[in-house]
Structures are given as structure tokens and as C-alpha cells.
Length: 288
Image (tube, rainbow, N blue to C red):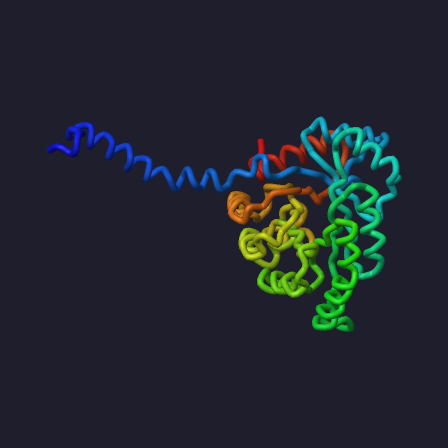
């Protein structure tokens, strides 16, 4: 058998190589899809760094461990001027501000973000309760965010809605709809990978929220512990040792094109604890 200048043996060899490459393609594609290296930067909450010393000392510590940034809560006692100087000197930025469960004083948090060089403020509506109804929370929170967004845009600071345990936005479909109704590029999602295990599977939330996700919080959650010791005890596990399927989480993040900050939101501690967290974050995100 001749095949246009290629003898039978050469043809079979090429055909075999092509078949082998075709068989490997799904595996190679999956590996490429799951790689987050060069796309994700790890961070910790500033107050998680519990060593004696100045902001400069704390940022230099985590820099040496490969942790690239910090996030600051509005309740932190750190001196903002000192922290900004340390961030500029070390190259370890304050990437975000945590405003939290309040609809008040969001402008002040935006101002703090601007001062510290952060580009986001994490927000979440107050908890839905018997005397604060679901529909009331929905309408009031959207109204507040719409009112403050022009100021956020002026300051070039994003408002990021986080997934929290406040009896509100209990499905990814609803959260996506809520964000889309705000209809502003300056209002996006802050997805907490541990918080939503109680309500389903994190990778499903990630795929549905998709491009709306600008930043993620890293923590884990054990359904097994929660079932025996209570819901809040489910967080008593290390990152990577709970019920999250981290391979599926990585794949979902990669498929949605996620690039940005992944910040540990767990118990902090001394240098040894920071070393541990750096290793855990690198492991679950396959960055090392």
C-alpha cells in the first residue's frame, strides 16, 4: 500500500503517533486547565500575622515565605500610615479591605482602601432574621450599593459581595442574578471557598458565578465534623483537610479564567503558622 509518497510502515508509525496524541489530549488539556501558576497570588489577613514587630517586620516575614499580599479589616488596630509605608517598601501590597456585614460607612472603607493602595472593599448585607426579612434585605442592600458605587468608581475601588452565612443569597444562581441586577463593572463577587460547602459544592458555585468572581477566600469546611459537632465546628480543619474537592475547585477556577488574589481566612499565628499556611495554600492551588 502506498500513500502519496509515504510507505506503509511510515504511514502506520505516523497514524500510531497521532492516535497516541489524541488519547493524551484530554489529559494534557485537563492539566493545562487546572494550572493556576502565574495567575493566582496568595495572601493572608494582616491581623493573622501574630509576631512581635512593626508592619515592616510582618510584611517582610510573609514575603520571605512567598505570600504576596495582605488584606486588612476595618476593625484592625494597625496604623494605616505605617502599613502603607511598609507595603511600598517591601512590595507586599494591601490588596483589599474587609468592610463586613454592614450597610453603613462603606464610603469610609473605600477611603481606607484608597489610602492603603487596595483595589477592593469586601461587603456583605446584614443577616436576614425574623424581623429583617429576605425581601427587605434584598431591596435595601441593592439600593445602598447602587448609591455608593459612583464614589467607588471615582476612587477606582471595586465593591465585592462575599458569600457568607447571613441567610441570604443561598444559591449561586441567585447571587449571580443579584450581581447582574446591580449592573456595574465595579460590583463583583468575593467567593469564599469554605463558606459555601454548607450549601453545596464550591466548584459549582465557581462555574456559575464565573467571571463575576474577582477574588477568593481560602478556607476549608468538614461536613463530617459539622454533622457530629455542629455547623460552626465544620471550620475546625486545615485548608485541604475538609470536604472541598480542591482538584475540582482548581479546575473550575481555571476554566472561568480566574486571575487574582486568593487570601487565607483562617486562624493566624506565629512564623511557624505562616509557614504552614503558605504550604497549605500552595498545595491546594497547586502553585508549588
